[in-house]
Image 1: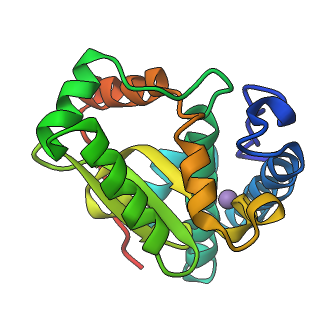
Image 2: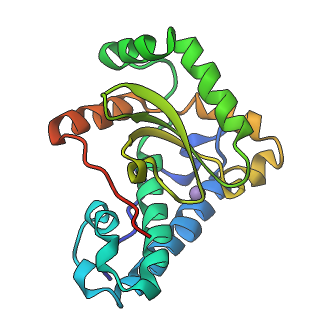
Length: 214
Ligand code: MN
C-alpha cells in the first residue's frame, strides 16, 4: 500500500444538519477509500511512482506505463481532491474568512457576498460530475474555476485552496436533485482558517503545478 486513506478530522455526524452522517460515511469510506484502493492497485504497475507523495505522483504521470496512466490520474485526482475537501470542512465552520484572505477575496470579487454569489452560481450550473474551486492563479490572483470528474485545477496551473464536491454522491442521500440546497449548506461548514492556511502554504512553497500529459 503506497497511499493511505486519511481519517476524517471529525465524526461522520459532525457536519449535521448541513451534511448528513450517512453521506459522510459512504463518501469517505467507500468513495474516497475506493479511489485510494484503485490508485494503489495501479501503482503496483508503476514502480517509478511508488513511495512518492500524491502531489509528486500527479506531477510525474509521464513516468507511469500507459496502461495505468489514466487510472492513476483519475484515482490520484480523486484522492487529492477529497483530502483537500475534508480538511476545509468543520462543524464550527461558516462565517467569513479572516483579514488577509478576506481582503484578497474582496480585491478579486468586489465583496465577500459577490464572491459567494458567483461561486454559488458556477457550482449550481456545473454540468455533470465535478468540482468548483477557489484557486490562486499564476499571477497570485484568486479566481473561481471548475473541473470535470476528478480532474484538478493544479493540472492547469492553478492551485486550489477551497473546493466543493459536486458529484451526486456528495449530496444525493439528503438533498436528492436539490443541489442548490447542498451548496447553500456548504457555506455553513467551511473552515476558513484552513482555506487561509492553504493559501499560506502556496506562498511558502511557491506554486507548483501538476501537468497533465495524457
Ligand atoms: Mn466525492
